[in-house]
Image (cartoon, rainbow, N blue to C red; front, side):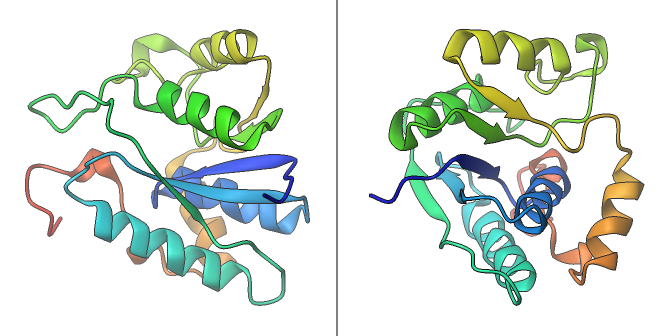
Length: 172
């Protein structure tokens, strides 16, 4: 297996697409990683990730996204998967032995984090726990700004998918 310095966790949403764009433009040695954890919107998310990579990698060399299957996630009635981001981090670190990881989180305070795993305090705990550096180019950036940057760099924001919009219908 080729050695990478960075992993970009990809979900097909605005933040992960912004992270992917940032990694590509930074010309770093990275691998995009996508997780199949039994989400009912898997096909839609993976299509978005694939289109994002092919769009951004027209002038750059990008590796093919690696799909990692995970079966240890517990789903709640509202579509929330418990400990999703930590399991993603742990799996990526174990598989690729990297010390740098991109994660699309925007928030600082846990109070405004409805899932508890997308804020700066959680990020710091994960860095200490796994001995890694989590890069968060989306931190404090509003979605409208990220969407504008994504569009400015040639990707149609309508292609992006967010599990936050999932309400039990895969045609969200």
